[in-house]
Length: 532
Image 1: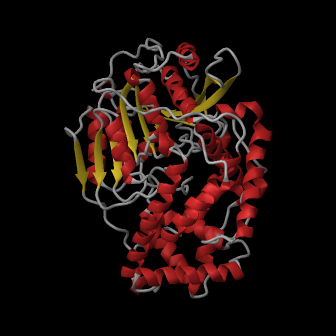
Image 2 (image 1 turned 120 degrees about the vertical axis):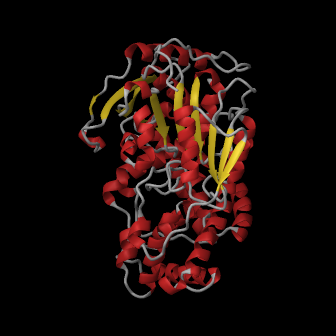
Image 3 (image 1 turned 60 degrees about the vertical axis):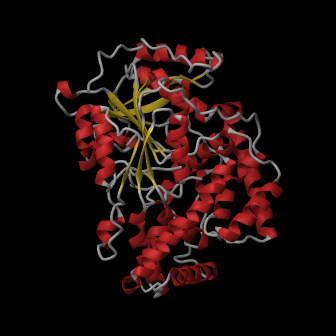
């Protein structure tokens, strides 16, 4: 499911011989129409380059960032057919010419997230040395923002509030959600038409190779977070000889059988563990928040707020659904813990304002939120088969909700349109590389990450031969690169700047837990957003 949007954790190459590498598939991969189409598109992009200039006002980027576009085929099997433009952003490397190592491309996940903001990361302390060596490049994947944008419903109706969020929905509530999922899937098909089937993870990987060529890079330096690790793994499988350096931050389990239905089941279970972490922390700081001295007491405080909001939404717009969305953030990022606990505490004492400020939908974000959800839905529904009988979803998630009630059904409703999707479904690619085919790549993971459970990082390391796994022990923030853990950041810098990794794997002690007293400081450390 999609993550909560936030700012959370995130030797020179030779002459840049643009276009000298054809987009050849990995050994053993059929030389099909799509791989030939990728090669054609990459050659065209290498010749055209990216005409960087001023960014449109709609991007809301400072003048220090340059913007451009790259053309890619809508359908790689027909490279001479319809083409779409992907928006790209860049800030040039700030170091001396001898430090320069080329372009560094970043994707924050989703599906449905843009990294057009990414060049600004060079101004953050954790990224300054990397920014001296690399051009920092962001882009909006197909469907996102101005890159052939997708939509499945009127944005003005997307952030409807207040809403309910029953932990154990009734049969009537399930029927209502089924009808909504069918309508949403139909809206995606109606508003996009036959082009909808081309919004896939495999095409995101092919687009990445075209972007590489357009940037004049013989080999790609890339960091993907969350969902970005999945199509990054597809890229490594399809184009291993095109990889220079790759970082996989908070890795999706790429196993065919997990994409995407079972991945979401595993995610819902992991969210329960991370929700427990937050409650245990709040209980340890009962003197500050007054939510209860045990995790169970904190859960009772949350339930009291949920029931009160069901009867009378805060500010007329924050109901149980908005409360749930706000507190889902605590399962992603522990720097949400203090502000959310404070808002819950204030609400139960009669002050609604902090909760409204943190949980109320923002009308100005409706268009972007609807677009991101449309891309998320299209990509995940197109990528793989899903159960088409609601009885399967009902059976699996009713059982799961007995053990993991916090997020299970909310996750179901996010993904249920895939049960009623029209058009062909792909069979997921087998992610795997042979030893020696891929340069060393770096995998970063937090042991208690809920959005991308840690088992996925271990599975990815097993499949990409020569990958090195860096683990932040006993921590659960989603997206650890460029965050508060100096040990993780040292491994990241050592790899990106010098190409060096530990021999096999390494671990880092957890970053400190949030300080409940320094609420302003802990509320929003400026780091890179990650979504899945």
